[in-house]
Image (cartoon, rainbow, N blue to C red; front, side, top):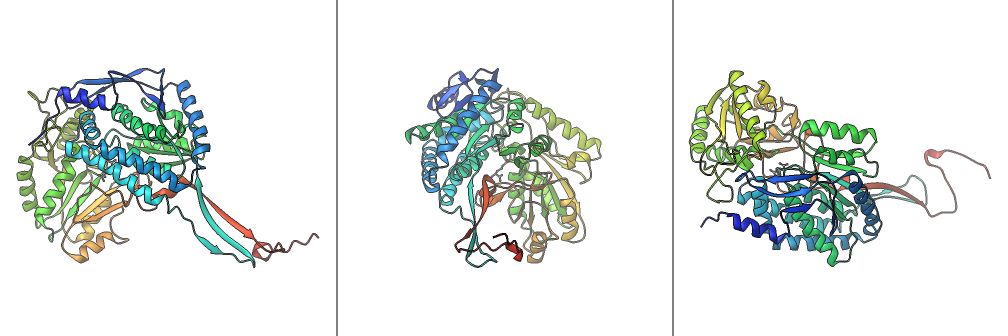
Amino acid sequence: MSEVLQATDIAKTLEIFEIGKENKGTSTGSYWFSSGEIISSWSPVDGECIASVQTTSEADYEVVVKTAQEAFKEWRMLPAPKRGEIVRQFAEVLRHYKKPLGKLVSYEMGKSLQEGYGEVQEMIDICDFAVGLSRQLHGLTMHSERPGHRMYEQYHPMGIVGIISAFNFPVAVWSWNTALAWVCGDVCIWKPSEKTPLTALACQKLIAGVLEKNELPDGISCLINGDYKVGEFMTEDKRIPLLSATGSIRMGKIVAQRVASRLGKSLLELGGNNAIIVTPDADIKMTVIGAVFGAVGTCGQRCTSTRRLIVHEDIYDTVKDALVTAYKQLRIGNPLDENNHVGPLIDKQAVEKYSAALEKVVSEGGKLLVQGGVLEGAGYESGCYVKPAIAEGNNDYEIVQEETFAPILYLMKYAGDVSDAIEIQNDVVQGLSSAIMTNNLREAEQFLSYAGSDCGIANVNIGTSGAEIGGAFGGEKETGGGRESGSDAWKVYMRRQTNTINYTTELPLAQGIKFDIL
Ligand code: UN1
């Protein structure tokens, strides 16, 4: 039976996390304070103002940084596996609150309930990963060129990690960063999107409870709220050695330059313009499932969303017809009703960008295969519901080169062999995710080779979205080059130190240099 979240349930959900109508948005652990302006959280699901949150002023920010610095001194002294134990407890809490937190994500952000739960699952998964990692933060040992010397490298906690996250994954991307940063011995300051402050408040309350129970200092997890101006406190701040930012390429370029100007480190996960190549050897049914989920999941608002489908001319019409048929089955509506596939866009500005993109593709010569449109009437009162659209177009259209955060899929044809399709795929500024649908081993391997996809993620017979946490996540070119989540992404959260130890009574110099003074 489907479960639709009613207004009373929303109130109950907020109550679970002790979120009232008015909230303070600045927190160091369980200590809440704030003196900034008020922002409201509007649900795109029904257009309701859920609650308001006070933003972080510059004076508040100073308190946060000082508290985080103090907390770091204590936290870094805890052995890494003990820090892992705290993250383990956080995962337990997340398991307990998976449903209400998933619902809140879905209600505040608009993604389907399944995807809301999936996002919390992604948090649990990265915490589990980080727990194991807390016993594996190892460096290498190497042989010294000098007799009686030993060399090795070790990784140390770095300090405060700043996290700027986007509305589309309002909680998971924070936990990718925090779960790793915490086991690495860092403390975190989080600025969530100003469009999703309540889910952030809920997460902060959950982790604060864990810290309090373990008598750990305030400041291991800090939350600041507000728009880009609050983010700027961190980009400019020398006390923040690493700033991890997820969002648009435009934002990433500003963050990268400012952080680089103070020689800080930034970890960027920016826009994608992800394509699926469909070769004559593709399984059509799998292609349709992968492409449709990739294009319309999260209403096309994932950085991994499928934006382009590059189809071989021999099967172009078959794929086109199958897609048009599949799009007819899509149910668009309240994402809390599990019968619906597609929820709303985040806000009316996103709807305007969606409409403008559809107009632009037509003005550039594209043809709409599946007409889009803004939905009106009962159930669509928020004005944020749109119909997923498909447009036939060329890769060199300006609009196709851009990432529009909306469910618009551009369909294009290729002739020749797979290298022609790869060339089209790589011919964009972004380099996040990519996929090929084929049962032909040669095509698949060519796609994965050094002459293949230039993206950070390259999949075979899987769509472009929905990566697991175990792999490093991120992309090349204007996607920013950062890697978060699994594999050895943890190394960016630590400072590396090379140690050489002399256990003799002589002091030979490296490179055989003679320096006799005594
Ligand atoms: C994002 O859109 O910023 O691979 C992250 C995926 C998700 C994460 C997306 N696991 O689609």
